[in-house]
Length: 347
Image (cartoon, rainbow, N blue to C red; front, side):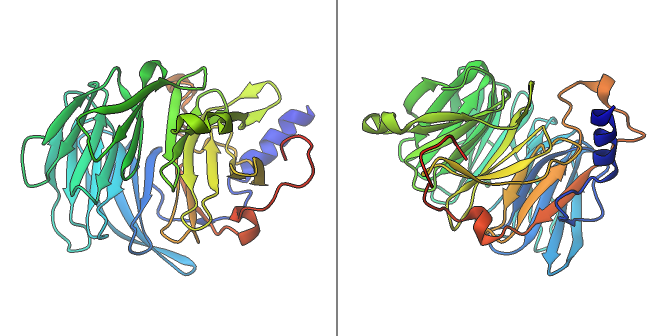
């Protein structure tokens, strides 16, 4: 009974880390969070077909605007100038929303199946979209047809860009690496170092490698250079006893280049890959964290707490299901790398 009472106590408090709550919360689960690179504007996409934007001010969140898709929205990204939001999802198209000017959204991209991933590539002035139709498409937003369509071995599940590096994760654990200076050719294709389905990716800030997270509570640290392969390793996380949870999100800190993981166990942790240690473990929330992101200077870590549909519709109770977006202000001690102490096991 001790375990049950502990669960009940956790359920009472959806915010054990005393994070700031963004209001009003969306009415269904959150699929993506993205901050503008120019200011503290936060966009959330959700399964209620909405794309919402808040301005994050000191001690408050101000809802700015929202737009609708016809079906659940799965991904979002900002243009580098901070004026425009792109969103895609189950309606198989991308909307370009000139949010700051108050303009109406227009369709700028389309696929033959839901769009799972999206990124704006500033250096190419192009949008890239990854879909379950097993293609990657590059778009000049002034043209109706894609500039280039790249076939993928399977459905796109994850994508990360740090120009000129782009890594795409698909079904069947394929990881396809591109040099965007030559985007029509695969630079390298490898199998994931993890044994189970790829859930998320994050390119190293120095573009020399990437992180990959899987549904099996594990993260792989992978270097591109063949001479650096001895630096590759994997580590377990987001596990509790015999319970193993998905790693849903990987985000590098924009200043310190440490990284955060967030998982379906309701926890987020900060790590340093270079000293191979966990810097901070945060308290578990009572529901999964499906997505997370840092703002432009790393002073805010945004994360969503809601049902992630990993146990299907039969485990979803609309009457009690709630969605939260929280903002955590990382302390420097949580996100600044520090030398490894001692030679024991992973901290």
